[in-house]
Image (cartoon, rainbow, N blue to C red):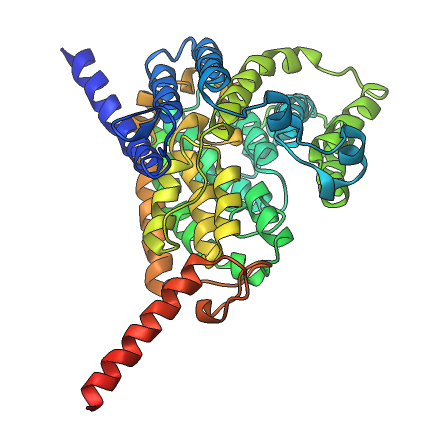
Length: 469
């Protein structure tokens, strides 16, 4: 009976994330095959997500079956669908490799994700074997404040590092200082800290970097930290008490420890080259693997970690590819309500195409959007690359029901953080390359927001004219 009630509760909770996706899907049916006004691709994708939730011991198989079913549908029913064009675009692959401005298709995202997920698994093992995590109990408080401080550390680290790296470093430390017993609610909190920490920094997350490249000023993203910091304290306190009750932090560091400075150098080299190649080539995975190969000449590389991370990586790449084939051509009107719902959607739908659609549409509050699509992915374990990466170390967390039940504070924190930002600053849309504020003066060739603003202005003038008469 309890299992039945738990299953029903889990499906109800999952509906919280799938229903917004379906509601957006209803606007895209057109003449393509649909059921009840919903494109079949969305139905197949929703079934895939439900399968992942229900069969958490077979997530990779479910994701691959879902991907195969969507591909078969596209090949049979979608006129003009070309998988090679979808993956690689129309420009030659040589041009795309040498000129990042000419890159097209999904291959850069997929290859980067694969390289980062596997590469940062290697980094985490190097960091563990460096001996640094064993020293940390000496400096961290012995009660609930110890895990609380670790979450703050991960949050800060993610403001200038990739969120996958921050989550993996945090997870590695947690394994050591909590003697391998890490609460699922705390694992969810580590993911939320890594995603929230990058939400207000244009170098802290792929989505914020996309905004920066598209002409959004760094200052217009930074206020995401109002929401993210409020959310951090909201979930970190609950998660820290959960962890302290489940397994208290190790009181003292073992005697006779030594730091492997060479392994620590390799960790630093991986992080430095990740940042450098992200800025120079928009391809952080390149730096990760250059550093790993250099490190292989200095210390034995833990290739077993790469093998262990492969399954989770294939799982995420399958879901991202499924999401990229969803026929979402536009988002609803740019409002705080839309931004709020995108947070829940990003928990099951890749936030990169959502961000691209928002940039094309324009007139968003970019800090609010950055928080929503960045932090929102923490609400389910497969909602962000950081979540998938950390569950390679904690496979018991690949259970949607347990993640939602034990990590309830992440959803609570998302809502509290979002509405605190809305209360403090309100909705403040800003310009990007294509669209300018105020909306009525936007110079973009096609801009629905400008057209609506002009129509409202005409109505206002007519009303004022009538009142004056």
